[in-house]
Length: 534
Image (cartoon, rainbow, N blue to C red; front, side, top):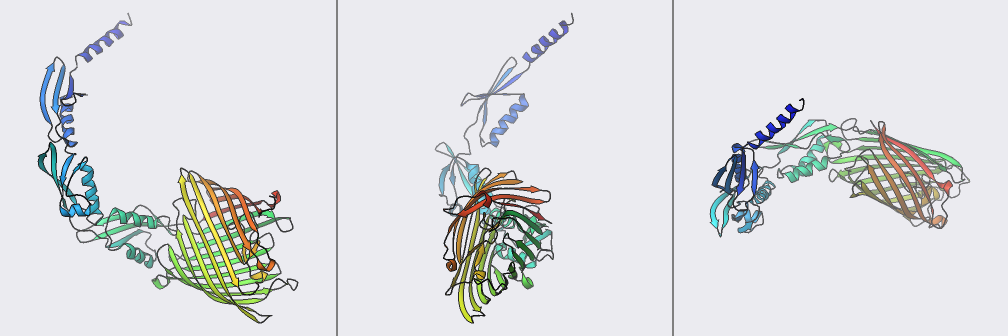
């Protein structure tokens, strides 16, 4: 007896469902049927056809049998397919014929509107006028109401407003007077993305008034001060386990002038120490001229010491390019009388340099592109020999991150340097390279040459936005005329870089040697470091 009410309710619901009215929309052209809920839904269905370019839809018949209603309709012609007639101006601007057939009138109108918008007519309207039916196809005439041309008249800074005036003037120089369109706004946005000193809170916004067009830039001051510490482990020339490392501190934009003060110290396993101080002021007196001063001191234990002073002035060619002129003043003193390979000398010279930096879209990478080129003419005086010699020095480095697919990237880097002199160079004035940020697998500044080159290929796999693995290989060659050495070198290794709350952590294992020599496990170098922003 308890089951009877449940069974009764089921049969009652089925009976009521069977008595519900049904509305079927029938396309007389294709005989396709569509079930709608009620008469209101049927009306909305017919309205939707006109919104999809079937403007001449007609209701042809209505049949009702019991609780089933069939509504027959004829969509008519699809006015999104039409013969188009255009004016000379539209045909010329959009590179179209004056009369042609299109299968998508809406897409065509959008393309024409975008074409005029890219010319600065931000509020243009594209109109289509129905001319009738020709050869059973709708024919329309396209016209454009352009409105006033909109150009970028200026910029308004919001948020971080203490940016250098020259920086804003450079943006105005590049974009002011250009068409206010999506292309230029995207280019402006990209030029400010990953800037070393500022952040964009949101993309540039445009304010249109009756007589002017201003672009609002919502800026935020970036935490750009950095502390970079590296600890290295490896064997020295005597195959003894040795500790080495470096400290690199950058104080940047502390006075809102995009200035930089860089302090670098390094100790290598062979008891050599480097101290380097760089001061960079990019906009002197609110101009596009900047200055850079570099003081470098290298001391090889108690054997000799070199001091370099490199003052420089440069011109901002753009936000990413610099062209500079610099002087070179260098002295070296040999402190160990048994060090016969070295000489006391002093140098004076003048040179030019070029620097191009393109920031990376990936926060874990320092750059997307980096190019540095230098050329110097130097006069050298060897004091004890009373000998004056001229030298030509050249340097070039280039780096590029290539996106492959997915989380895969390829980093390519090349570096070369040359000291060209008529005389035989002393050991204490030779080029020094090798180490963590140079030819990996060798001790810091352990390779001496009057000419060298090397290339690096590094595969990188990103793990989200917080870490990446890398595997690398390097090949290079050096020339040391004084020792008659011209070895071919290689190195290889792997690393892991990841973000921690205190900064970017790096870990790297590498090994390098001369071609023809077997790989030695004892030559393996291990580096651990952290880059922290504050």
